[in-house]
Amino acid sequence: MSEKQIFIFGAGYSGKAFARANEDAGTILGTTRAPEKFEALRQAGIAPLLFDDALTPEIGDALEKTTHLVVSVAPAEAGDPVLNAARGTIAAKMPALEWIGYLSTVGVYGDHGGGWVDETSECRPVSKRSAMRVAAEQDWLKLGWEIGRPVALLRLSGIYGPGRNALVNLENGTARRLVKPDQVFNRIHCDDIAGALLHLARVNRGGIFNVTDDLPAPPQDVVAYAAGLMGVTPPPEIPFETAQLSPMARSFYGENKRVANTAIKAAGYRFRFPDYRSAFDRMWADDTWRDGEPRSPMKRS
Image (cartoon, rainbow, N blue to C red; front, top):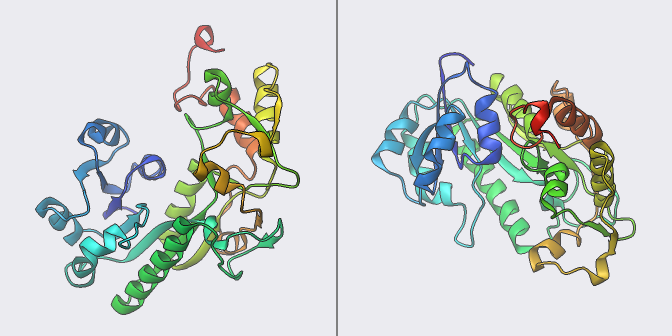
């Protein structure tokens, strides 16, 4: 993607992973709502800009030269913040635009009783936030059709990677093994989010893609596997019914499904980490599970 300009609305955990994977892509710009996060974006290779639901002149100037637009901002009750602020600009003032990538969630499928879903499955969101995602997806697809640009919807499962995983939770004492019978979740390593985005952006491919691993698994199994790598005793199992959870955390357990990744594989992408075990094995072996930077043996726990 040489001589391209990438603009990321919402350059958070996934956006920074994408930028790090695109070091040779040319100019990468990204937004945050917090100026104190500017330095972290710079370290990831992103020129930071402030976006607080309104376009600044600096953002407008950057969008005019942007070829690839990545959107990783959650919708709100008033609609998609990026579309609310920038629909007109995207439609009329981005002559170089070739492709749009929108990061969504597998939560749009809702609950399927543990059954398999793929990109052709019905969206029947349970939570309000997932219903807003469905609406935002449709709005982005509509805009793409109106302006004649491909829009890729990447539906992501539970995101993990350096600094955000069960190994970290075990080290800091926050890991729990909640057990709800027959409950499974899919997951996705941030490097595969970056890889899938890059793969689609390189060929300006639009469509709907589940970006998720091959191994839907009970959440307590992931914690136990991480504890085995660390050589520590896993925390005791806690029945879901008696667990103290926030309403949002509890709502995740109200959706049970196995998510297939048929479309992204058909598009030619091959996962770096097809399951959590291979990813945890690599992060542990490389000692990159805390923040992506290897530590000396003296500092490893």
